[in-house]
Amino acid sequence: MIRHLTRACRRIAVLVLTVAAGVGLAPAAPAQQPAAPPAAQAVPPAQRPQQPPQLTPEQQAALDQLLAAWETRNAAVRTWSCDFHKWEYNAWSPVDATGERQAFAESNGELKYAAPDKGLFRVKEVKQWSPETRRLEARGSEAGEHWVCNGESIYEFRHTERQLRETKLPPDMRGMAISDGPLPFVFGAKAATLKARYWMRIITPPNVRDQIWLEALPREQRDAVNFSKVELILTRDLMPFAIQIYKPGGQDRDVYKFESRTNLIDKGLDMIRDFAKPMTPFGYKYVLEDLQSAAATPPASAVR
Image 1 (cartoon, rainbow, N blue to C red):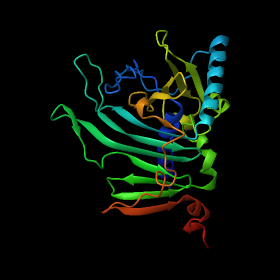
Image 2: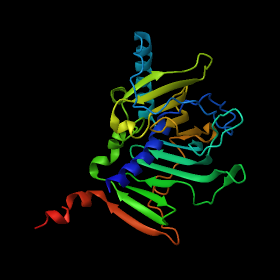
Image 3: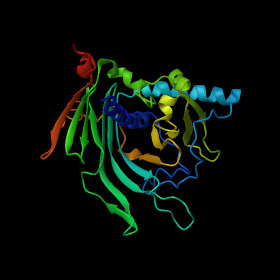
Image 4: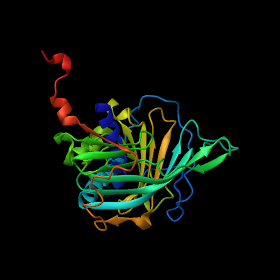
């Protein structure tokens, strides 16, 4: 049961990242041309995250100033919605003539957030690489990830199992406790928390003027099991442009790019409709998991 909760929290973590960050790609595509995915990067062999070189006093001061401003900006955002593009790179990705890994899958969708603990993530269209046709082929409308969190429960559509699964959150995981999740880059995350859990540094290329690039490496094993590195790109007003998440081992990665023209900050959301309990689709089974009740019930072997 805890495994299901961890899985759900990781999905919240995607939204956590998106509200406050955008991931550094290599190189970053111009904001006005979001259709082309970033080029794949050569990555080092899988290894346990290592502490990067120590920052100079000037670099540390610049990072501290940025994180403090970022914290203030995040606290001011009450609601946010945006469309996104996603590219997935993995061992099944095709390789071009130069040996460069291309996207195995492309998708687009929408996300919504309302402070402190409501979120929606929905993939609308998915294309996946077909070795038979040697191109990306559209998948069915039910192939995409879709979940809703209303602050008390996470509702997840599991299309392959034909289920709508509700996971009730324990009280200590509701509200601002989300900021202590696997990737606490938003939802009220504090600069001190980020610095305590991650080695962070500014990696903005010298020729980039309208963006801020950040790199974050996990300090602790509890975070290293979720990702080996995160790269983020922020606009100058500290809103998300893109996110790149390297999976453990450093080979597989997910890239998210956010459509600035669809940004809605502190407007446009229906707080009742957008985060309401979804209807169970025809042919699906509704499944309830109550973690609080499960934790309070002793195992059968303990009952005498």
